[in-house]
Image (cartoon, rainbow, N blue to C red; front, side, top):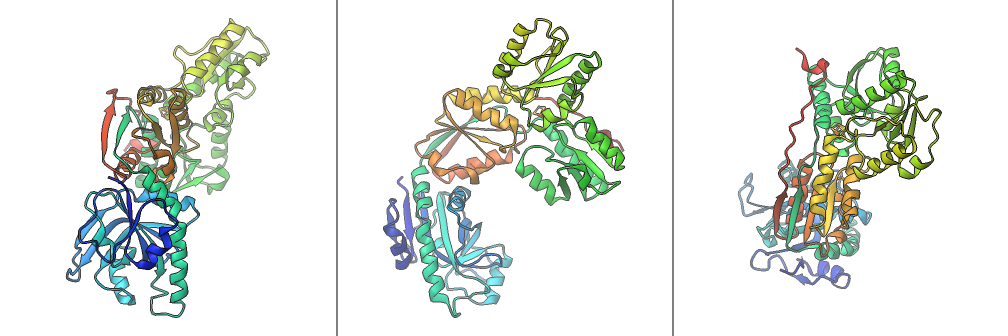
Length: 494
Ligand code: SF4
């Protein structure tokens, strides 16, 4: 079904008709029957809550059509599944965008009392047409520019100017609307298995949650507990306070050390400040620290294969700075100089791409025959499994979407592995960051998530894609992981 844009009012139609390449039809209040397939309803609306200004854009997460319902009744509710995708596109155009329920009434709402009553039920904006137009299939998107607000109602001086500015702003939404139209269509989603949280990340998050339950807020956390914006925001909302360094933690307070591990100097600083420390370092990272300490105790140089700026590597180097040399890739391994080539071992960052560090280790082995190393490379099970999972779907996909934050090493590697298989890949924190242009023509989408990305983000992305057209989902692979790590004693013992 071809995408189509509906504008209820003539002025709204005029604002968009010469800016869009997508067909745009003026409907009046109703086109007689609800829409079907990908439809975008564009126009102006009134805001119901403070914090939304004239000129801001509303993208409806759902439409509540009150019609002639009695006060307090909800009426027809229709989900708009693609809202976050379009909202993200509008934000990238520099607009202030609010996503939330929009209510359609059978009369113009302007009184403070009526706006407040609708807002109390959870709606953020009101119009008189969208509920009459949206279909039930979730493929409707509603984009409305705010022209009146509780503080600047319709019947107030300045309304004509606000109306004209609102329509100008509506014109500026055209590139996002065309991008939405180009991205619509039926598609297949291939889900990589396994994906999302690993045992180390679950342990770290559980540790902070249990600490909050047991000791109450605030619980300080040094650095991001795991490299994911959503996880950090969620814990922040529940009372965790994230700090860069321990000098920002009040003396004697409770602090959790993040999953990536820290140098001994950080623990020492915690002692000096009399902090109560709960260590959420992943046991697999702790194992690499232990290897480095063991080499250093034998006066052996450790070549640490990894990214020198990554927190995990910084923490590991800190175990024995005078004994550790960081090497990022095979080229650096070709030139690295050691104080005593007969006393050398190697260790690895846990979240690297599987192939390159193996090559780097091979170069070191050739140059330094005395090289010793771990029985199995240090790249953790979760990193290897997720890379195998994304490799398995990449070749069958037109585009691979990796959910994860830009500072998540293992998530970045997943995108690289997909690219290495010859498929376009993109790393995004959530659906809102996904540029719609990437979806145009992509009928088979591979999806995975880094070890620090919550599984809900995958479900949400699929729901958003279903707002662009019918989606069939195939789970690729059957590998299940049963690794579990015990929680730190401070939060697990009675
Ligand atoms: Fe531990 Fe691996 Fe997860 Fe990192 S990715 S927290 S090393 S299990």
